[in-house]
Length: 280
Image 1 (cartoon, rainbow, N blue to C red):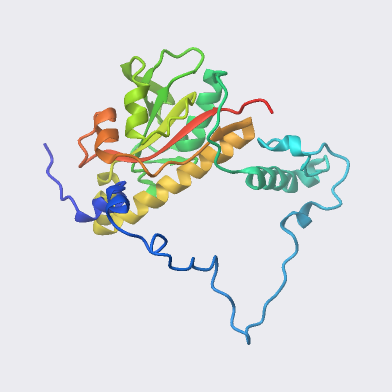
Image 2: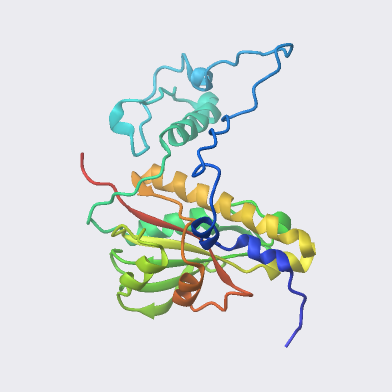
């Protein structure tokens, strides 16, 4: 078995939520909230930007876009048809999804189709081009190392038995890790944030994939990769009218144990429930 160096910085990637509970934050002490941004100095030159959707103004002739989960609000962007507008049309779709993106914690009991789950998993970590020893995927990754494994607890997915699965991005397949409804244990590991979702997507860190190339600098890249991947999940959910909510406040030891990970070379990093939104 190949021996390799492990780095102390891995602790940074773990939930460490006990530190929040055991310590006292400045907020709890009544310290004023910091500003959302650093204000410019009085002598700085400040330039007004056009509204972000001004790029699409005057593009009449096409349907109003309303693909996001909030499309019922009537906030669509009109896009012209024709090849000359294809780039702006794609930008308008992305604007619509970004504008409606938000964390959603309430879901209906209607199950997801297997095809929907397939699309979501591909968006999260899907392979666009396999080069053998590495691959280019739907999410960026430092050195194309992709130090994340994706697990999904299928709770209400048509065509799938209830259970824990692991996504194989290279083959675009699911491997059954454990069959059965142990959602109560998962809910406990997620600190009560299961929310009766159709499925739970869980990112597990495999730090050595990045450490192999970047050594002690790898941990930051692993964290960045998880952020890229989760944002893809948000946008993919918005495009289907589904809801999701990123979770960083979980019980590290319990979630590692739930996934069957050793907590050292592989450990839980991030989680997000996914479900169909209730009818208004």
